[in-house]
Image (tube, rainbow, N blue to C red; front, side, top):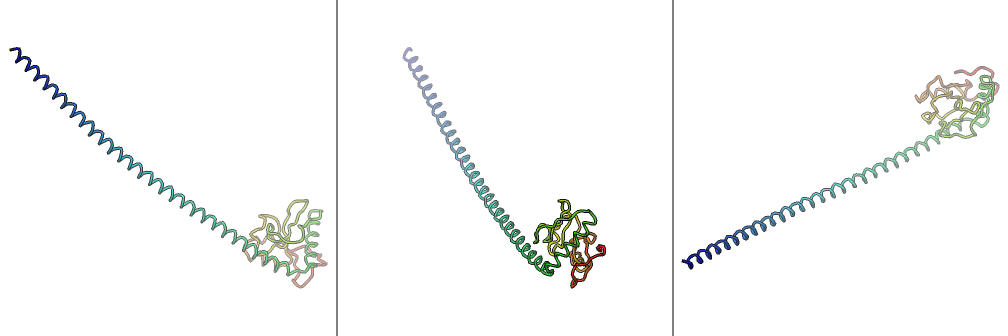
Length: 212
């Protein structure tokens, strides 16, 4: 009887031991399966992250190339605009030189005297003229100052009227020169004042009021 009890106890213990081993084996199998799944997920996440990094790197490189292309285009536009400005300025300088070469030094002096006489009658003060020579700031004409303030421009070049200050009278010799300026469409006729002598006449002995 006792032996049977001992045998049954041994069998139960053996069954429990085997059951525990089975449980541990199943638990280890689940752990290993979970570890494999974790590694698979980690590898997939790493692959997705690497793919994202590559995508960002490609986008960053494309953005850099676009910026470089845009900057190069901007610099080319700036260079082209500067070259165009210089070409236009050279053309205007040549046109202004030809414009002033039409007059002799005596005619220029007499034109200045005519303007000075007119402004003396109007303001009771002598005007001041810019130094002899022409500048782009005043459309290659001579600036006229009254009481140290800009009053108007003497004989600006037709090719450079877009450079004129927005207000103030513009003085020329005669109707032909006035017409040359108005034909450009860049100046209102009521800004022009001329003194009327034909081109071949000198400006001396002007006694009549100027024609506007």
